Length: 338
Image (cartoon, rainbow, N blue to C red; front, side, top):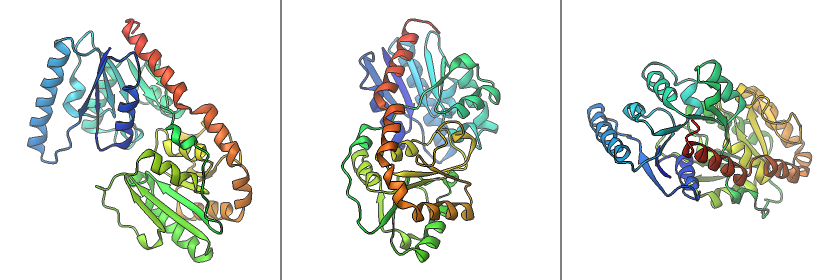
């Protein structure tokens, strides 16, 4: 089987998922098509046309069986549909929420109409695809990719007298990183034993944050490097306004950290409502401070359940189980069952 993977080389998840696909034995050849990021409108249009022609020729010359769109807005590339090519669409949470309007909506709707599978990382995301975006239910598939095995490693190095809080992958506006920084600043004035780690994955976004409250700051870490840092954290904070599914939540659970997450629809009915598993907050300053302070005051209880959180993540989000699902999907397309 030969595959074109349309994604963004600046996206950590896009690159990781391309590499995961490359490990499947059923794939003979896979090529990464990097979506255009040119700011000049005219130059961007020319580049898209050139890339469209390149993809078209590969498909017509029978060099491709499946096109996988990681992210579902790739402008003119969304128009590329030639039978008997098969298409898998993997939307991001923001694309089918706040960005879903105007030109973006037009091109995403075309892609969904031609897709054989549309992946959803949560039941809430699947529900929105079916009921709000009118994607046929038999096209949708719950699939979360699993998480990198390095997060399940058991080695940890705790700071003896510190409570370590980490926030990572939170660079876009929807992730409310400014609220997290404000809450940490407030709580550090009350509790002198707090240690704050901030890891960002997109250095191109201009963030106006008070970095003086950050004790450890990292950019673009490898997965083993990131996992080792998350494993020595007590609390992980990720409070987006919208999301499809937060990979960082499950990574924190696998590492034994205690996730603080947004009380939003995307996360409803996804995780058991257990105090030992995670804390929930509305993405507003007052609620976040209250939730974090409760964790700080009950840090012994939080850390007593590290292994319980790790076991839950291993049972539900192992990479091996998700790769088996992905291999079955590709075999289904190969057999022409779609």
